[in-house]
Length: 166
Image (cartoon, rainbow, N blue to C red; front, top):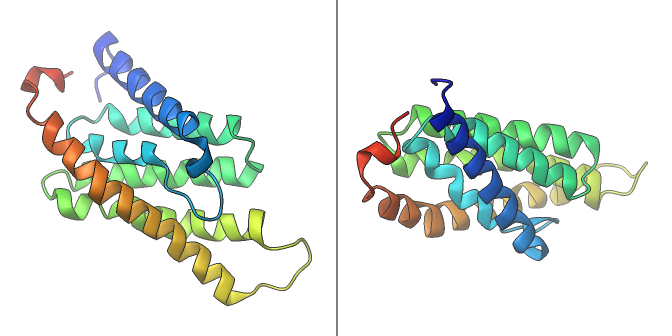
């Protein structure tokens, strides 16, 4: 990633859009069952590497300002960073790239949601509820990334190539 004004601005705009969508649709962006519409932006690394830090910062700010517990803020944002990096690596295979937020968020955020917001402190782990949390987070990601993210990517690909170049 080139560190120039254009790439930094693009990353900042992506972070701001992620944060805006997260809070504009706050009711469905947080919780045990979530459809964080901002996650449709997770396909942007297909177009530009600048989206990777933008998505990470947007998610970090969203989780921090959304009042999450510290490990949700940290690990949830890390899941977004890892997913964005994987999407970028798979940029020539968008259908597979769209699965990366599902995988990372299901495996990382799903258990966080269960441990931080579903399970009572000191209560034994209820494996069915843990797996249910993982499944609902993953399902939300599938819906958002495939139903919204891929069509968004298709529309954005129509923009001139210079739009995405650093």
